[in-house]
Image 1 (cartoon, rainbow, N blue to C red):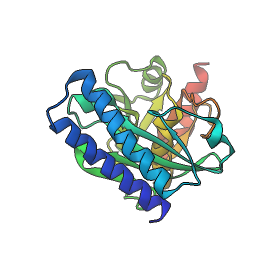
Image 2 (cartoon, rainbow, N blue to C red; image 1 turned 120 degrees about the vertical axis):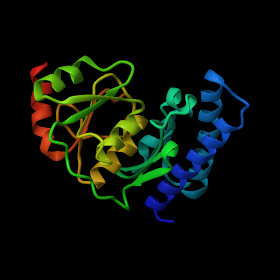
Image 3 (cartoon, rainbow, N blue to C red; image 1 turned 180 degrees about the vertical axis):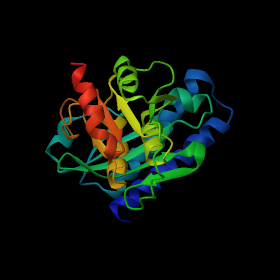
Length: 243
């Protein structure tokens, strides 16, 4: 398999495993989230170590080490992005598998198992036409003040949604024009979504407009903008006004 084929296959299989774990009826509540996270993570980590043993690896659910920092190629995975949504049998959760090369999100796949969809860098789909009134996806439970302020400034409609991957893919799928996040994230939250968004011709950056750079010693990456390219300059300008 090519790297892109591997990323898509792993994201798809991990998603199916997660559905099986949930439908087993063995777990509920937080126990379901933990079981899903650990089971999907074991599959992804073992598969990547088997298939790409020379590459570095960073997963939300595995203990991090310094070994990856010396690698040019590093896989960054999030076995369940949106554990709450997964546990509630919603569709707005995701599985992230990305390959970053020299810090750049080059290859990736985001599975939306609840929709039986995998979006991938090597098979971009046509992004639907933009809505006349821009739609901005935000957290369904705690929209960030900055996103609310920007939405008011540009006249955007707020759309509540679950995980970071689901929100990012909503822009790819034409369900929204803008995803602006300022509430704190880590590299595994955005690596695969950014890779997929960029492959679809979308804008992906930090909220100061700087590029997304991965495989850092400190994996905290608190902000993200994924949007249609025609909205990037305006949104970045409005964010800048907030200081």
